[in-house]
Image 1 (cartoon, one colour):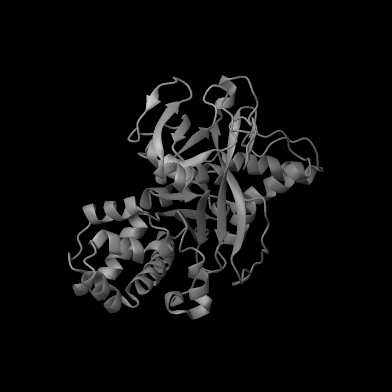
Image 2 (spheres, rainbow, N blue to C red):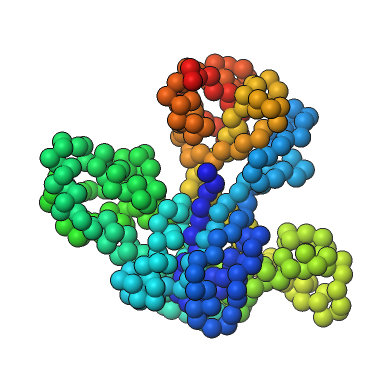
Length: 382
């Protein structure tokens, strides 16, 4: 299971360009609303240092790839067509579009900052966030009376019932407990109102599906304006999807040696070389972030995910077939050895006996809290 990030925003804010720049896929791009008429699904990666450098044997990733000791772990990205006011009620095929992000881990809300107007940026953020929240609330509250009465008649605990209700949205049991411990909701489900469903939707977006703001078209405004936007909206990340896509295409054409800031220009005519040099200078602008760095922040800083490597042989760090570190599992910070066992397979989790640390060879119990880059062997009855 890889990380899944949804891209949302109003029409014509550059979502498809962002998607094309961020992933190995390219979506249809146009300078008019609703260029995207159905969700696009693509793949990108976040990077971690691979443990294979410690044992002198090259890893054999089942997913993603490894290059010079850097493991590239897959991230699914879904580009949702533009959302308009009333999308939560089905306007502009809103229901179909929203359904595409119901099980994402995080949402990147893309806004157009080219006007330089903080008020316009905030208005766009509010419109899209409200539509997402309303859509989740409507889905949660649908058939609520029947659901709540049935749950109470069966004597279900509130968290158990909500886990069943929210399964469609990919909200984990741990996140449900976190929401109920930190937010206030009526103890009896049968007295919940639409307002409670709305508050639960807000809590889901806060705890389980955080929204990150990406201010696109930052290349259309000067550095001073970018700075003012960051002061007014500190949690917005300013990007240029157009410049990112240009760099990606230049790399594919052999005009530059890397997509990273500071790339060397190795080909192209003078006009192309001047444009690439200008783009590289812009990437160094204060308060500007590269899209791949934004993806890294979402995975590591916002979602607090770590990468763990389950192995069959704790000495050679291989699976049964002899592949070195074939699997890189993305786990939330605080996950345990038992959580990892269940991720590998339900039977492995149910038959868990103990785990072994591949580095120290120490025996670990089910409550051992996993650390980033742990290499772990699970011993199970099954």
